[in-house]
Image (cartoon, rainbow, N blue to C red; front, top):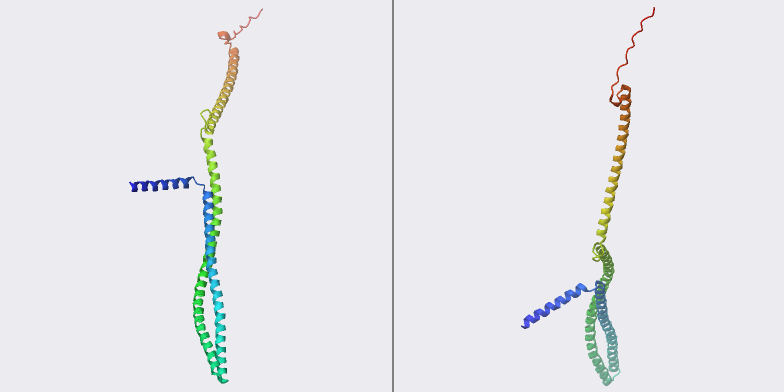
Length: 258
């Protein structure tokens, strides 16, 4: 039962994340990613600053120990010289005091030399870590600049995508039915084209009809001329009113009178 609930909880979580990613504004998510990268860069710089500070502190301590080492060396030498001078002056007690002081200084000198060697190693390690930290900051700074440039590019692409989506939506609305009583642009276009085609067809038919009438008139005119010509010919032949013209009688010559 517990395993089933656990699986179901993971499924719901994955589904919610998917729905969130699907409905989230890419511009906001992009800004979040850049903000996170900038915060990471700041944390890296702080860490690098701490590493560099440790290096500086180690160098300061080393320089102080080196100064102390030089002073102890000088004191030890001076104590030995003073012990030798006291020995030459016939003052063995004072010579012994200077010698004891020189031994004490020598013990301090040995410890400081050990500290110096330890600090030298620390400075070398901290210097190497400092160089690596500086290189990491520089590299991360370059990557951050690339991300900022990529952000501007992506925002530009996102704006273009939104404009294209709005244009697509507008075109889709022009081709969709707005309501039951409102035709689509395509339907109106088809209706206008149909009326235009019908008007053109009617005009062509009208032109054809007029041309036919002209031909009829011309034909009628020709027929009238032909009938007139035929009537003229009939008149010449005496064929009017259905009669046939007879040939003219030949006059007989009159007899001569005596």
